[in-house]
Image (cartoon, rainbow, N blue to C red; front, top):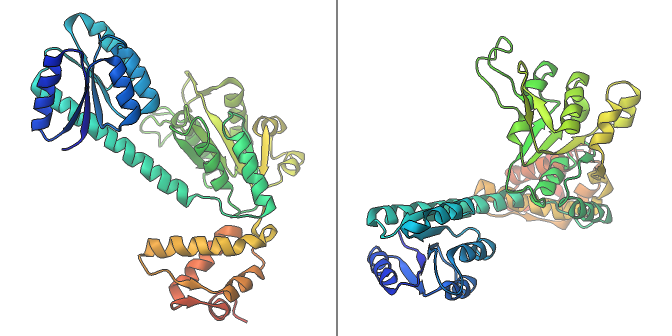
Length: 387
């Protein structure tokens, strides 16, 4: 394994020994003679791992750790501690250090710790890359005033913990709005947990949301952690909230009011810190009037209401969306990108989109599969809207 390691120690003999050992193992090594020297180097260079003494002149190891946590939060920090500094070293681990090693360092433990630390850094970087890739696939595309207004609202609301009710027709992109809210929030390092309330039978929805204890009902053969607990510290997205049973609505209301849930069949209250986003394609005011939705829950959920415009309200975005889907789908299929003619876009703009963006994506996928190198209005008429 190769990598760039920063050694921070005011004892030259320690620096020389570590540099020789790590250089022999194939690592690139940079040395810092004290805390101030370390602070300057961490700000100007990228390191894969940092080894740092605790007691040093000008700035001690804890100060260096705190600085590294701000400017290089993903870089693993290993404390090298003298016997009298063990308590301080343990405190450093609590503050974010990867591990500590006592002086004089054991060679095998040192190398194993560095390897584990760098593997974790690699995993963190890969996780971030994959999240960025997923986030890119969930990008909200469009330039129409209605969409720009929505994106502006998302940017304002996302950093807060305000509950958001997302409304809009099926296929309009409500789930993408929820993902963007989470990605731009202060909770984005913890999960966004989604549950489709319309897809789960009413008798099972409480178990899905709050979990259950073993033996609480016939098929409960083991304890189950519900969505609220899974989302603790993060975000819970209740999709199609308008289809939730009144009994489940009452329990969700209690969870929002008290910040506590109780598993089905249990009697222990469990505290949860969850930001709730909800979405519906129904008019909840009419549902309240019909007695199918709780008014108090509605007011709990709708601190902010974001309406996602239908595709028919943003016809001008069809060209951008079509090109976006075409590139995405061709890449997923591993095929050369096909050309989408302006005549095809005009034909797509003339269509009445009952399935919104979901329908448009399916149409573009069908055209990619069935058409040759170029997609024109002829292909659209032949494969999508035959006369």
